Length: 554
Image (cartoon, rainbow, N blue to C red):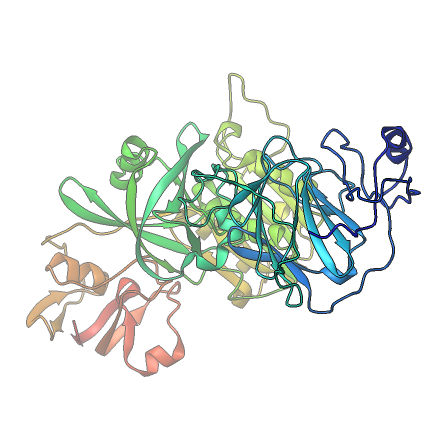
């Protein structure tokens, strides 16, 4: 390089003064020999933030430096806007502050002088690479268009269209490296090992697949003991997966039990506001095939297959500024999903939540319910227990079953609210009767049957106990004609005769069992089939019975 550069030196006596200064420091130049080169100093001077401001260099609008991390441009800097000396490093007072393993506090400097740019290395440990050759501490190189500079964790790419190499430039012999240290950005080498914090879920979120419908296989990432007989199973995708569903919906598991594929539907207890995981919460049931199998057999790392999501028991379907959630036992799970969503998204909704359990030790999500009530002004939670307790159990809250008096205490304005309720059938029948008696508008009353688990029929042929008026049912696609009464659902009738009809919830919520039907039928009041589906001749087989001879296209 030419030797007509203005001379600058660093005097160790200046360092205490620099330490006291803020980011920009003005330093008077000291006389130097005419042939001395500008010098940034050595790496021991870690507290120097900006050594001086020199005379204005000619600014070229197109001169710029791109900073790349993991192959992506994170910043573009117009070099003409830089001071005479620009420090790059981890120190808070560095002009360009970067964070990376092995990057020095003051790692390198860029000198702008007479329409030219120089790079000098300050770091004595890791060093700096220029076009894949090592620049030792104290060495300086004149930068040209297209030069690539590697510092630990980053790559600097220079675009200097007016600085082409010249024969007048002083050539510096740089050390060629056979192996580039792994802490440099080296796109031609293997990628760095995966981070246990899975930072790719943020950095590469656009590349993550999203599950919003259909069949997929999930991996068990965690199992949480909620109570002595309740477990929460936390799932992730086999590869990173985002889960999209409506809070309160359910999924159907296709489980290999005793040599058969058994289908069971469980409410999702997690919220889509936390999309990287999906959770279900399962309570043991005496004699229950699937709930007990899940609690006894499923372990971390197991793979399970699901189908879904489905269900209309969700606050998304019935938006309201005021809501009352009522849950009993494991029926708290879809209620918790909706509660988590409203809390996570800071939705402008006034929520009262009334939960009922047998004893204090059986309260599912007890601590989280307390946090919801304490940390979110829009939530008020009340819990009541119905049975006696003993031993180390302690309870000073409400006791007894949910009654009109308890509803009025928690939500005196309940007439203005949409009510969402889930729990065992006898519990829901009791609350429904109470609301009828209080004159509640039942068009704003929404229920989910069977709580977190929905029972399904068995596999293969079954004998049915018929009583009452008999009717003939023709399954036209299967070529089967059978006899039924006015009590057996069309889905149970099909299963009893080995006829396949798809299903999920078995409670009239999801519509998976919709089939075309011709004839006189009756539906139970929980059936949520829409007007357009009815007009097209469809029924939900799980909640429909025959009132006359039928033809079913199945």
